[in-house]
Image 1 (cartoon, rainbow, N blue to C red):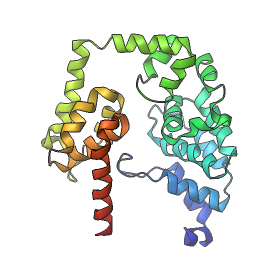
Image 2 (spheres, helix red, strand yellow):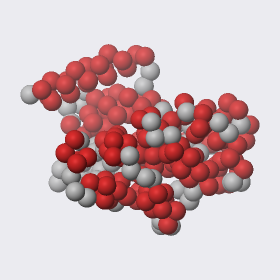
Image 3 (spheres, rainbow, N blue to C red):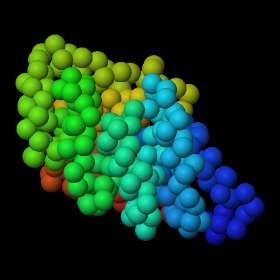
Length: 252
């Protein structure tokens, strides 16, 4: 980090990394914390990142995902100006669900500059149909929104009630894909499956627990992430064992 801070063209390089996401799979390559640290250390203005968010109008949210994740972490390292940028995009940006996901995943929900009144702003800009399309029943910040927002609570209840045997069958397809080695790429990975499992929430937990002991490295990775996201106290020993194993691998 020290070399980056003093290298010629460091600012442009950091902006390029934040705006142009070159990660093969964001689920296994998380660099938002590192980039947020660089932006803070170099005291870089946020205008280029904000301009990227404002000008990008594609349907795929992936090109703005890393920028939103970096903005969500910047207030934690003293860059409170990032809160206004992130808050504005979460309220009215075209890929606002991705901004809300970054807020929920990063812990930025604890910051009043981001959180206070956010639910009201989100709901004010959208009708029930838009909310129902993008609400995730079992993830933050929606679960907390539901405690104070009757509309969100009602939509979540309706979505949970609509989980019919037919929808459960569609869930089964995700598990079948995850367990099929023939669908994996040359690195043994199946991009997109971690995101699909994330959206299934607790419905994926029984499979995630089984996969951890499967001996299949890909399924173990899927399972560990799923249990870490939605597991309960009973999963703590399993997760601690995973953490210790990872530390031993790094030291080796």
